[in-house]
Length: 332
Image (cartoon, rainbow, N blue to C red; front, top):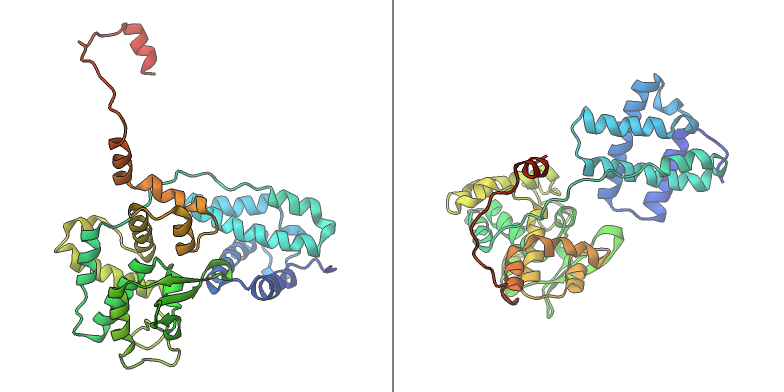
């Protein structure tokens, strides 16, 4: 149990002991939590006129945190979903402090009681087969970068890996022997294996013969041989989407991201009749219920279900206007 109530050592131990050592959180999670507290400390410094390193834990109360979340949403334009991600990081820190400072239980419980904000869930976006084909055909495979981009996008859309998983792939993660697959460690430090289709395996075998760049053995390195940044990947996808849109105009109105390619893979599996539990394992979902979003997104499967039902017998009838007063009330 900790005896100090200074915020700085508590926050430092949260990152170094709780996240890195005990939970072995992914670099993506650590970066997300770091950015949250960096924004929060800057906000607190402006609000309390005190250096972050001099703050006491008692000063970090529920009203201050709610004001910070409101500032993000109202002044900076963050969505409710992004606001909730910031709150998740803060909740995680206070859950850790609950063990370190049990004497501050009341303050901690008030913060943990701050609810996530509800938001409208939009349908999952995905690409059609013609759009995927146009995207994969866009890179110039006579160049090194074109071969890399083609292999990157093909691997992403066939495996459904997350962005951080794609950029973190090493050459050793590709198993090209019998039962070819990709081995990856995803969210929660969970390892999973994703099988490779013959076409994807053939492309990756050719890509692995390319002269290596950099010393990190990254599977898809940048031109400098380093791991791709988030912006670098998005630049790559935007470039090829624009080129592919000349052949497939529907891509003009779509934003192509690694996550949308992941959704596309999930939709292909679902429409092929693959069980939801298998898709959840494939994508590394914590719960099978997470895969429910794909059922809600595909109109093709809904039309297929409709075709199996017995049509209702409708009758034609002449329109008769209703009472004007009732119409007024109905339209309020």
